[in-house]
Length: 279
Image (cartoon, rainbow, N blue to C red; front, side):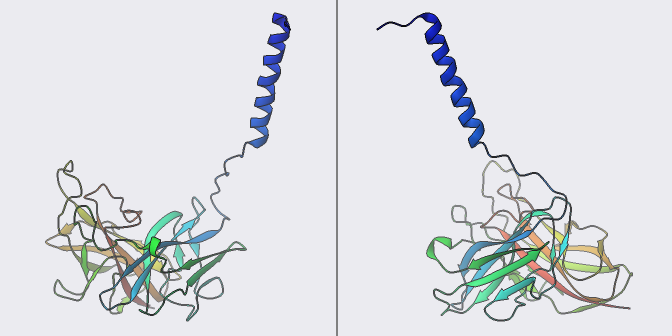
């Protein structure tokens, strides 16, 4: 059986157009970026063991808005369960993905249970379970290949209680007058271990942000330099009330990113400064 050149060309053209049509029908358009009005999803990052036999479950979140900062007070729209609704989660959500924002301690006998964090923003509820499945264990306190460890943070003095890793530490309550710039301090030290020999010098730093509170928080410098082990800046608050400020101690010896907390594993530390703002 033989075919003319024209028939063969028409056949190939038919096959090409059919393939193009099939590809177009199966194509999924990328999501359209929105500046506001979108949901906020909690994220579970993994767990790590504590020296006393308990475990730390590490959470972050994804605010799908590109510009909107979302406030979700603890309650039906921002809750942990089972147990108290308030287990230290943030109530102020910055745009886009934020990793390793806080950790919740569960007892040694937690077993196969799950701690569920639910967020409702703009009418959309998203929940995520925290658990102790073996494949979700993370090495948050030491980078396996290099021995690099998270920075150590302290409030109050260079000899005060320390925090290290996602669980971090919480300060005593600081009292500040409304609309009065007030000095805030954190002591930060790092082991100086470099994850890569290609890195000329290991660096570390701190980043301040609002974690809880109804009013606006203004920082003179949210990323102050660390000098002689201490980072100092000024913060002012637009309204009276109870606030929590988060300070992220980061170690970028492996090219880590301060805003994203260096990824899902090691090495960063959270510090939470409790503030009461008076009229």
